[in-house]
Image (cartoon, rainbow over all chains, first blue to last red):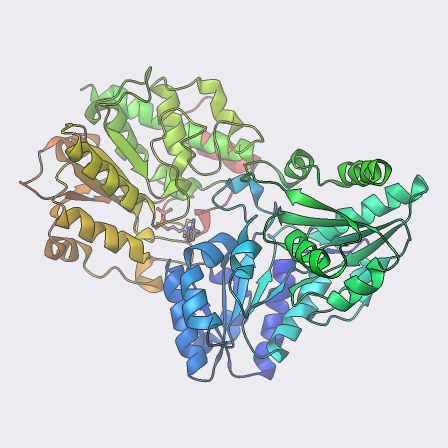
Length: 313
Length: 271
Ligand SMILES: Cc1ncc(C[n+]2csc(CCOP(=O)(O)OP(=O)(O)O)c2C)c(N)n1
């Protein structure tokens, strides 16, 4: 794996500034956390708004700006965007398909020390319950950059998950092109299919290496878009691989695991599925690494859980 | 009341805040330090509580709606005996009773879970309503931030507390005039807050939020008939640590080892 490191948040901010130069219609609305837009606010002060600590108003104002032909970007801690303001998202933006880009930060365990209010482990479930919004969870900073470019080329509401300020390693996804709705095969093997998204991709790849050393071969898919799901890729891969594992830094209800389970149950029930993530629990304060261990999502735990799954079924 | 004793406690609480946040390597020093005299006044002189029985039904209750100030609250609760002081340095660690934001299921003495700004005052209003429904005399105190006042739910809850004549509810505004992106006035002005709150229908008092005697007098004075009390406590964000005072940058920044040392010396600690 590449030794370079970068945070998804800084990558997003860089791409946003770049897109800001290219497209004068891009505007940002902040709720007292404007630093998430990086230099955009400094470079384009007349296109930057701050409504104070008022996430619901942030969404409403964004909707109004979209109705005026602008392309608004909003950010907040993911929970305050997707839970506090979900009805504004649903009624003001999703139903009419407004071109607003919703950016939820500090998802998964990336800001775990803040405790359960800030640990975003159900945000995708909230957004997935609302029709019409594309959902993206980039695996690393390079993908976050490409995804940011892509969401501005896409017409319609998008929810993108970012993590915290911590710099993370760049993955092999860096060399691949990004397309909304397309999964990427990062490793190939015939024994098990690991479908992961966001912060879980790194440990899934590491787990695949551990499995490899024990003679078990995994295909690893980076499913950066949770909606629309890359059904074609899933159909293709599950025609030969019958053990499927989903991994996400999110509750297994309502996120990637659910999306894959729902699709396979109706289209290819002839497989075994194990969903790994957080199961019916709230997050709790701690370091990211401790939390991953606590929930069995570090690479060693993932490796042994997949190994057991292959042996037991 | 022994003023000197309370002031000493405040200094200890401030040192705890710095030590805890330093050890956790994360936390909100600015908005914790501004709360110290408010919390010490309440928990030592004003509130009717039994630390040995945190769930005592007749106790006065406190909702720290600006939950990120919890290091101050944790320290005060520990010194009042709700839990052992050595727990303080476990702040934000896996399995700790002291979460990054107040969690009533984990910490003895925490009356409501908060951390998502804007929600606490509605819960406090519900508690005040509950007390009236049960014919109980206990009081509810709710501390909100001035940035937090920008959340619409705060205004909904204020309306409800006036509508229901919740004179057993005291709202305390930690008015340090700063939030994350800058001064309130630059981000989203609260306008003339005293006049606004009077017009809303509150029994409004303004007080120096670091003057213990004034705070106690204000909290203990009965509110005018049928009106919830709204106390504007003028405070200094980062109070007590010279390089943090009135500095936006110290909202959610962790002091490094050198800064922790400097702060503790200023706060009268022995190193
Ligand atoms: C709903 C919600 N939105 C945003 C945040 C992030 N946040 C934490 S503290 C803070 C600023 C709070 O300002 P203020 O209420 O003035 O508190 P103080 O300055 O006293 O620390 C923000 C925006 C949050 N915790 N909850």
